[in-house]
Length: 70
Image (cartoon, rainbow, N blue to C red):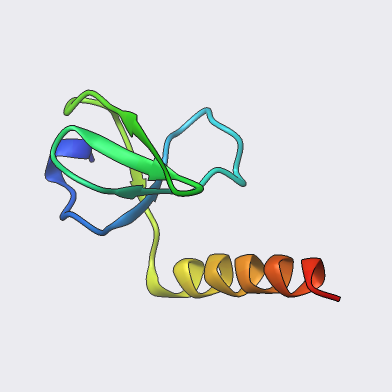
């Protein structure tokens, strides 16, 4: 699948990039990684995350933020 085919708001990974890097489509020409917008080519190959993977990612992110406040 390509970046262009994703819906805005979809979570994805880029093959060959660290497994821990989860991106989100912000617009037709940019994505976010840790709330930072980055340009991306529409033809970039991506791997969309399924619901279980998204839930796991969000849970890990919440645990990280909780650990900072302890």
